[in-house]
Length: 88
Image (cartoon, rainbow, N blue to C red; front, side, top):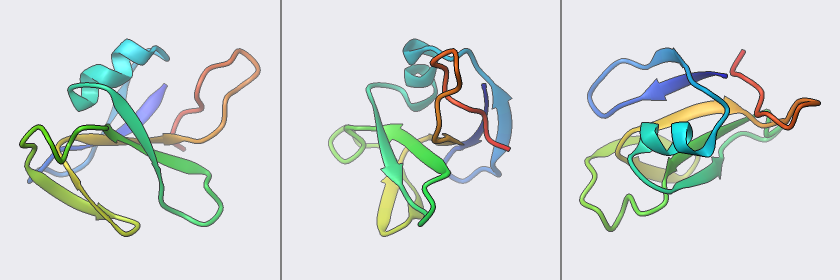
C-alpha cells in the first residue's frame, strides 16, 4: 500500500509498503495506534502507541494531538481483499 511517511524535522514522503502489521510497525518503531484526524475519516494517521513513554521526538500536531516520533498516513478503508487502502 502507498503511504505518506512523516518523520520529525523532515519533509513528508511517499513510500510503498506491504499490507502487513509488521511493515506498519517497522515504520513507527513499535506497536501501532490509529489517530482519526479529519471529519470524513477517509484517512488515518498511524503512530507508535507508546510515543509519550518511549522518548520520541515531538513531530507534528494531528487533529488535537501532538504526535511524537515517525508516523504515517494511510487510507481508512479495507478493500475486498482485507487490505488497507493506499493514500490517494
